[in-house]
Image (cartoon, rainbow, N blue to C red):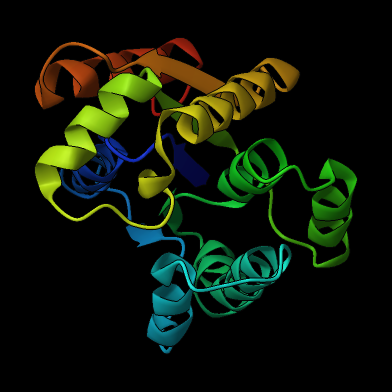
Length: 205
């Protein structure tokens, strides 16, 4: 099974991805792989550093790097794991690129959709959207220290990203699960995650 976790930085998705993968492996006796984008395959450190540096000038450079990262990530990690019958939990995937590049940067949606089709990127079985207001996300990331190139663009940009995620969730309600993560600690959010998956018929005994 292929499960993706999406949301703004500061939404808690990284913590939830780790907790969920541990739950699959230890409580459900499944074999799950936790990975992420960008940076989920060996040798990607240089690409990740370039993307978050904020030094890119051409409007498509960022998008090209994300798509290159995804192509190698799929080829090296995601598809081989799925072929072995493993569960793959991926923090950020194609929907992140669309939210950030289409809603955030104003690039055309159809280009990313066609590239994903031509590249035969696997489609997630379910996508969890950890939703928080942009203001909450920025407050949380500010407490972590130096913001990356996306966080430093501030409230208007992050608001557009959240709008993108909301639009994507509305467009494919059968794939997306939206969780309100603006309140409650990580255990409360995790309980909501498991309940939402159970209601959809996933991981039921």
